[in-house]
Image (cartoon, rainbow, N blue to C red; front, side):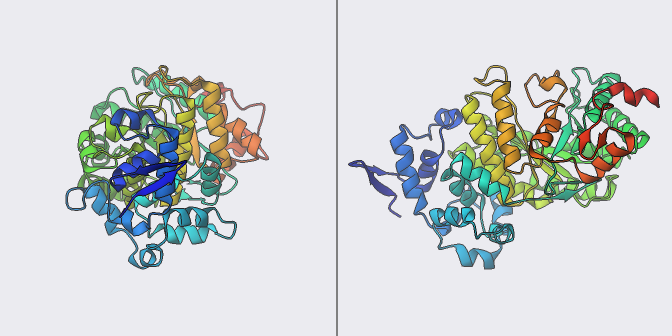
Length: 455
């Protein structure tokens, strides 16, 4: 296929789909590090002109990693709905974009067509969209899920209570949990990134968080974000596990670097359905982030946006309760500044929703990135308008264990007030019973964690 166009008197020709996809991507420091980025703005625009005319069947036949060599590719392609694909395979990427954004295109129509898309198609159409396009497209797609409560419903915005502690102190973590609960953070999950991945430490934190949930009859779930094998051991030993977590990559080689495989995730999923204490049926929690494959040397020469889209194709296999792109966490080597972080957050949210996932976003940045708290709050506002399922809730927006900057316990209530949204319905009822919320608004009792010391 000839991948060529003429722009302002200059001819641009791209040798193959892989190079075209990289050149068409919005500017990212990670793509430049990988040597796949456009050299100029004009070259990027030319690549998009060419990509807009590429039929979808070409992208199916050009996966980022060969089918016979990569199990992530096999998962994505084996799950493709052949009937839907046959109806849309001759569409161009540009036609898919126009169809997705058309006023007459409903969420039901998009959900059906999405079953005939591969990750490379999802990535390609994302490259042709502006930030506002990504927000509009994602806003059409509400993806709800249920574990011990329900997230992703219209009119709702949830928050992960993230009480990380540099020494995994149960007392310190419990205090952070109470502060978050007092602000209405925790309807997504009470999720701890442990400093110690050992079984004994993870089991202790599972017991402690479960005790908080049971003592206060909280309609939520817990999760200790250790390696999935540690959580599997906890489930087999009878520890109270709410959600099963794992970071994933968009290639088999990338997942090798995480010490996981599709077979291992299949086994964890089976254990979750058997042993997790919530009612379900959604028990899995995945985290991703643009640049993970490049940092592991596992990107196969492709751009980081396409590799991220492949993560979502893999996650879909497990019907997760939530998926979270930790958008600015890997660092400026991959997303250099606030503009790139904001763009990536909107891209990831849209791609996840288009794939059919209940997406949240960790709107965050590391201290050596060219970003600040205002930039992250701007991203959170844009994502809320786009229908994001949940954000992180971190004390003061400063994670004392992971050493990065994030959204705070205060931010979800502010966003709910700004957009007239409420917590997950079960969680809202619980807050009203305790007197922490009334008619969707926090009461005078809210924000004071000493409230939870009465038992």
